[in-house]
Image: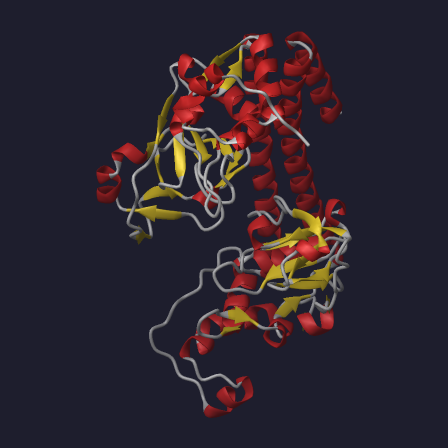
Length: 465
């Protein structure tokens, strides 16, 4: 059993949070607070930080306009602007000026399952933030250091302490203002350099992946191809009978244009059914065995897996029914997230994935080329064509197996593979640097600042090598 003996003055000092519950005074939280006081710290409010709570927004999306940041864009230490970005009009953005986020502002999730996740906004163009976030302007404190600190085990514990509510946990600005932040002035600049180096590597990773897709589409003669949406077109009864479909969109000529181009590829073509192996979702987790579980929200825009759940089989969702191996490609079946396609790396070998994915093993195409093809406009059009349903529109196993794939010549596949592998390695390097930055701050808290700086320099050099 754990217990804390807290005097009345400590409760008065915590009155800004209106907390009298025992959870708030857990020994672990008090120990962290005492350690930060011992090495020298100041409250966030003492750094002249400013925290704003954005107003509620009526979601009137437009095709082009001002970027709207939602909770799903905020990941630990990164803001994902690639997965389904949405925009609002200039007029709406003007009415919501108080919700504006600028370069080097920090976004932190204020509610929901991801409460406390935070990252820096590093785009030059201002954006508008949703009300499920808080906007922090760090004042005299280096924003890169603050974001890293809040993501360390000490920062996350302090944020955890400030949560209130059960079904929908929240964190309030008055509590955040009182969070103690260590005075580590020399380390702050090293953390900023590491953060920006990680960002550069991430951007380079995106470039390498884009180059892989360009190689593929140029090989197919579709590098400059743009689908044409025709308002009127005709088909015959026999085609509808073969497809067992009567919805007009299924017979859009653009689908036929793509398929004819693929079938004219000199290397030949086939279908998913006969060129790759489509796995069954028939794995049943053992109740007391621990598994890594991947779902749709864990897929990044360049075919990478950005996170996972680790839990015992009895605690996993009922849809965790497919075991994946390194080299497999998982493909979202749900319309609206068809671009959520990822390559399983060694890190996720033997993980489980949701039945919301189709899982395929490579065959005539290597894993990297298959990934690039299915995520390209050519692959996405075929996935979209195969979707059916009303409430939850998706592409079923039978339609997925009919997707036409080109048999790319081996030397071109090797080039595509090299680009994708390089992209993944760069992204991993970027992720490692942020983990090193977090650990350096923890070392500074546990030992001293110079030891942390030396360790960070050494770790970064090992990664570069």
